[in-house]
Image 1 (cartoon, rainbow, N blue to C red):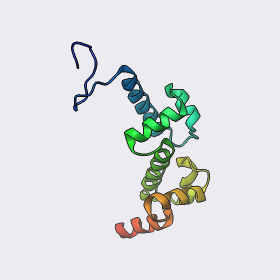
Image 2 (image 1 turned 120 degrees about the horizontal axis):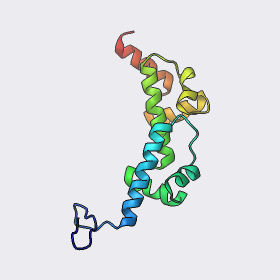
Image 3 (image 1 turned 90 degrees about the vertical axis):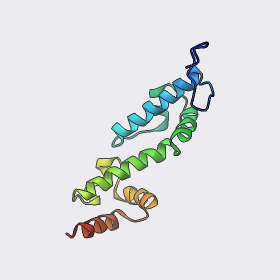
Image 4 (image 1 turned 30 degrees about the vertical axis):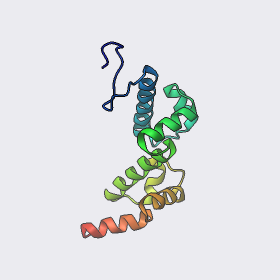
Length: 132
């Protein structure tokens, strides 16, 4: 803290204004909301309202903080959950809607883009690794 101005100071010595601190906190709240509610329909406008930002500010700040857009992050969380469920023996057809995708093809498209293989290939690879 900068005692004179009672303002947080980052490690690199730059001052952090209250506005930046509020935005950082709002972006963290948005991320936590996604982590807890990924299985629901999440749209950027509603998420931005929830944290008190415009959709443009949220998108820009989220990308700067986490390296991906809010939409891409939702997809990542959903795919990770799908992987976990497949590792427990569930089939992709059983998983898609439970993790927030519209259908199996929606899951497959995002899964392949993020993992480099289809959900079926991932499940087969996982089962082979376990020797089942």
